[in-house]
Image (cartoon, rainbow, N blue to C red; front, side, top):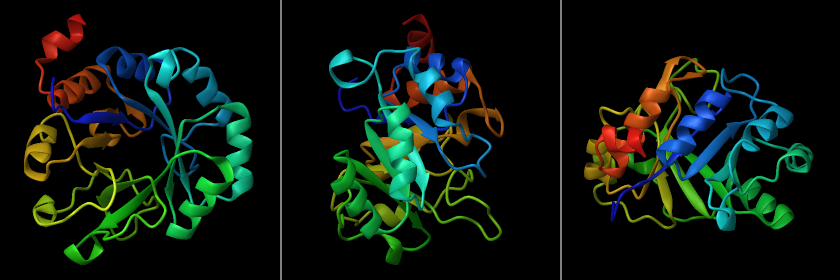
Length: 223
């Protein structure tokens, strides 16, 4: 699996989803703290789910990522008091990313909506990593997780200013192509591994991670 893209399974909201992601080799588990999302969880629920698997880093498990939208510091603090997240992922401004990093001493990933080449970030602006997602369609109630892909060809001449992840419209069927086309070192999926909005499918999780890692699904299931 040398050179395989790393994988974040976002929107974990059930024991079934978490267990499948961990068993299949996910690098990050994402918990959504944004009530309009069908994948939203409370800090207490996320903590109970997280306790099912070893923590990240030295414990050998996947890292825990919390997704927030325009968060106030008090919201982050309240969540961290219940669940010691490894990474904060935000839909918000560069200034918010810098402030949260300084306040909480944790890596901050900033999501960036992409519609044209002009949207591609030229600077990290305080973020430890950038998550490139499609701009939300008109009328969307969420800034991400809308099962929409942007034109991956836009990334051909882009020079990443920081570590980055590719998101938006990824599925087990297209993730290998997306990685090959963009050179993405990591990918993020939520709706692309669901039976219904907010309901993860273990088989789709296994297939997605297998495709991103370049391994056969059978090998992942046996592991």
